[in-house]
Length: 247
Image (cartoon, rainbow, N blue to C red; front, side, top):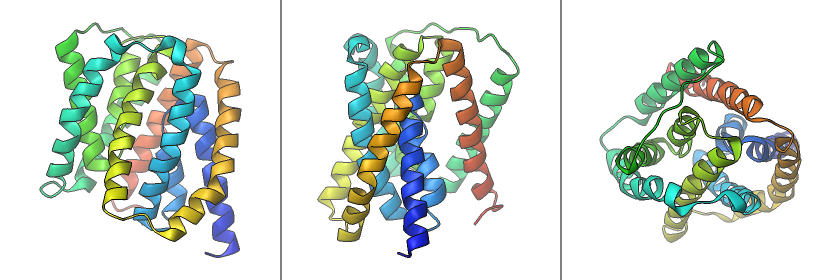
């Protein structure tokens, strides 16, 4: 890896950590948008999982006062069903088509809600939450984007920002643990990837620390708007490559 590529890798790692601390969402998309130009898709996926485990574990510990197993249970159980189905479907479904559909969903959802300041809240029960968790796991298994559906759903429920992060971060962490374990078992983690992880670890920790500092200054309305902009940018990042506009 050249010096220029290393600096780009480190910059993307810092920004990803910052986004993780600030919102708890979209770290992987931010990192992948830059990393995929300089390292392999397997290295990118492995590093996102490893850094995601660290950042989510720390963030969940920070918000531990808001954790509620009763709230989390249906999403986690649903994800346990959906994630394996997504992995199975990988051999039968074009993941680019799935990414395109998810990207269009994100763009549409974000634009509609950015133009509509007030969001009507939804109510649900165990069965609906289980289904949402299953769809979130299914999309995660197909695309590696484990937090998109659950993050949207948390916004639609109209929860305060701490409650939203209390739900979508533990759900994402469970998916990451499963995926990272699979990579380790198959021996897919190379020595160069370990080196890149060690280079980036201090920066992702620093970025998350800065992001969490600013997160404490956000009210619920500002947090909602910030997530909507991230949904929009993430959706665009998914749609453009799927349409062949980016290489």
